[in-house]
Each structure stands twice: as C-alpha cells, then as structure tokens.
Amino acid sequence: MMKSLLLIGFLLISIRAAGPDLNVLFLNRSEPVYAFDRLIDAIVKVECGGNFNAYNVAEEATGPFQIRPIRLSDYNKRTGERYILRDCYDFEISKKIFLYYANLTGYPHYEKIAKDWNGSGPMTIDYWKKVKSKIKSA
Image 1 (cartoon, rainbow, N blue to C red):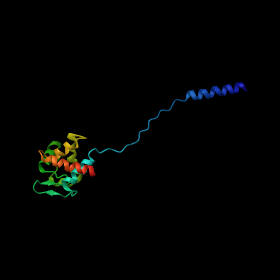
Image 2 (image 1 turned 120 degrees about the vertical axis):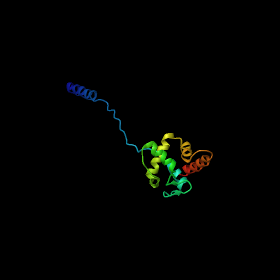
Image 3 (image 1 turned 30 degrees about the vertical axis):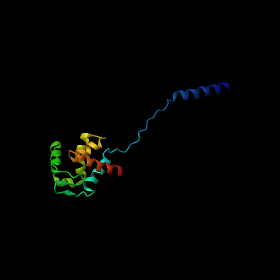
Image 4 (image 1 turned 135 degrees about the vertical axis):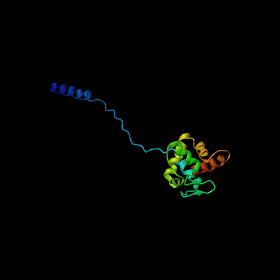
C-alpha cells in the first residue's frame, strides 16, 4: 500500500513537471484610427456647410473641401492623377486630395494643416478659429 501511494505520488509529480507553463498572447483586432476625421468634418462644415455641391464662383472652388483649380493642378502633378474640377464634387475624391496635403504636415498638427489648406497670410488665423470651433463641437 505504501509503495502504491509512493508510486502515485511520483507519477503526479512527474505529470506536473512534464507540463510546461502555458504562456499565450492573444491579439484582439482593433479598429483603425482615422487621425484626421475630426479635422475633415470641421473643414467641410466651414468650407461648404455640408453642401457637397457647393461652388464658389469667385474662386472657382468646388465641392465639400472647396478645392480650387490651382490646388487640383498641383495635386495632379504631384501624384500623376488626372482629376478635373468636376471630380471634386465627389466627397471621396476631395477627401483623398485633402488627405494628401494633410499627410505632408502630419498628425497632430491640425492648425498648420487647416491654415495651409486655406492659403497663406493673416486670413488663415480667422480660418483656423472657425475650424477649431467646429472641431470642438464635433
């Protein structure tokens, strides 16, 4: 009987000793982060008030981001695209153009991105104030 208990004890010890610790790493799939979404929403509110068919006759600015011909021409030269101004009514195309320029500056520099998008000079200060107020309310 004593031998049986001793044998069982050794078997239990050897079973525990033979089993390695299980170190497992589980990766959860996370949702992508779109760093410019809040800025995009704010700029669209300022530029066209949500009217994706907006057109500014004086500047020939088109669509939700109010893209001007000179900006579109620069974008096409830099990327090899062949968009025409009419394409800028399409939100996804306009967003693609905006993101190209936004990524040149990079996250989290919303103020510089917005000012660069608007142009240059003192008018960009007021433009940034408008955009910033829309970011906060988003």
